[in-house]
Length: 476
Image (cartoon, rainbow, N blue to C red):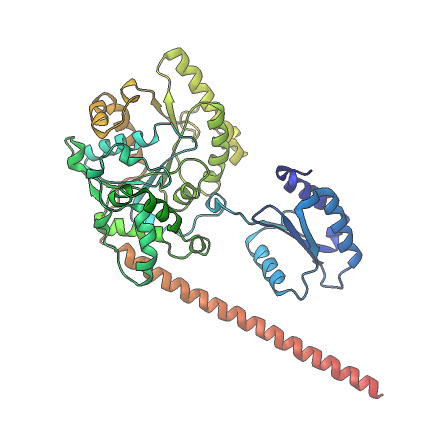
């Protein structure tokens, strides 16, 4: 039996050592369930050698067992030619004359480059993310929001943990709006397709008065779901199954429901900062938020083996796609002797993970360099927060942890100075940009179609001349 973890290495090793790549091209397309197909065609456009094709099929069947679907010649297969064209367009060869493309069943947005970040030209979105649960991520987000509001900032908090909502742990149902993010994702499809602007006030909770602190700024909250879904778990399940992030739009650089959502927040509230409580783990929502929308990601990790593995999964992707991040060392022990060992373990794990993404990193940055991107902002364990279960508990604990979270808020605002509001309607701008993209795509499509039609016409003329010449020869 061949395990999936070995498949790609086996394919690369095979094509590295075969003499066939000197006279043929190979396109290895790995499907969403892991099985793959190989298209083989001649480098010089000459006649395909059937024995080569059969040899590759036999070799790969023996090497990779049931993972191989087929090895075939794409000539005359319109679908195959289209897949090859897309593969070459979006990928560099992995070896001379060898291309490889992999289609994923889920978690697309941990793999693809972020698209146009128009929204970030006018607002700061900060994602609070953790690979594992239990790191204090949601608590830290709320405490940071308190600190920002006391600094005079206008802050919007979003609960994007849609399958395991966290905000209603701190707020009672009576303090919630009737609708939340999940409602919006379901409703936006029908209303935006009808060019109807959804009133954001239905989803926003002004929370400054609820927070009970002397604040110069303001806090708004958008929960994962509002009181209507909270009162009906079956309707909540139904909404989760109807919610559409519009995966096709993400991969084709179109306007998505989340684009509309963030633009509506901007146009309604014009916040200085949007703090997002993201979903834990390798989840589509987390990947989308960090790689497409976030001005800054705060990945919460603790110094243990599961989180060390999480660092190696997450940090190379963020670094590869240029998604800004600031490491958070969560739940750091307070006892000095234990804390120092914990700190060194964390630094080693983070350093190794960042090295995975940047081979030059070890030579340019020392393990204990406090300016290195692997060096975290430290959030020590605090007994005052150990049993926090309500907003009131959090407000009682806040004065004792205020200095820590004011420091975190200041560091975020240092990295992301507030924008000057320029009166731009992001909804209008998104629509304008989308129309421009559609016009450009249509123009490119017409040009490509014209090229194909010209090539087809030239081929018809060539064949007619060839047939005419052959008839002339037959006559003589």
